[in-house]
Structures are given as structure tokens and as C-alpha cells.
Image (cartoon, rainbow, N blue to C red; front, side, top):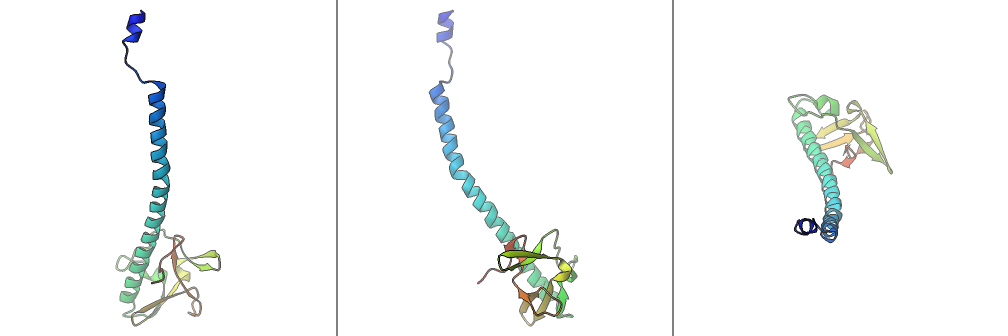
Length: 135
């Protein structure tokens, strides 16, 4: 019986611990990298959506120069999906509906406003990320 047990191959506790330590090191490196990657992808998506809205606004403004963000949402211009739009008011993100975000196009300049009177110009935030980062 003893001879049969000695001939069996298996994994020792030391080998198992070595594998667990190596996996732990890999996880410690990968998790922060993936977290940063997700954040960058969300910011890139916001910027791409912003660029699409600006292009659609420029095309739409051939007939109109002031309109709401909701007016752009059609299959001819842009699908805004379920994005959350707003602007930073100090340290607070103020969320606005698509009907409350006004767009004014003057030539090649597209400006966003939080009021119908076009007096409060804003930097548009899309899903918590600034859509129009400083150049």
C-alpha cells in the first residue's frame, strides 16, 4: 500500500502557493490598468458623441440657427440614445433634459446654452464626462 502512494504524482503545497502568488501579482497589475482603460473609453465616447452633435448641429443649422438638443434627435441627424447630458455648476454636475439644452450655431461656431435666452453658455458633459475638452 505504501508503495502505491509514493508513486502517485501530484501538486505540492509549495507549488500551489507559487501559482497563487503569481496570479496575485498579475491581478495587482491588471486591475488598475483595466480601470483606467474603462475611464478613458468613456471619456473618448463622450468626446465622439460631442463631435457628432456639433456636426449634426452645423448641418441642421442650414435652416435654423437656434434649437434644442432634442431637435437634433432623428434618424437624419443623430441618435442621442440614453446619454445623460448636463454641465458643471461649480463642483456639481447639473443634469439637463435634451429639451433644456439649447444650441446656437453662428457660422462654424457651435455653442451650448442651459437656457432658452442663450445667456448661460456651458461646456456640455455627456454621461459625466466633458464632451468638449479644452484644445
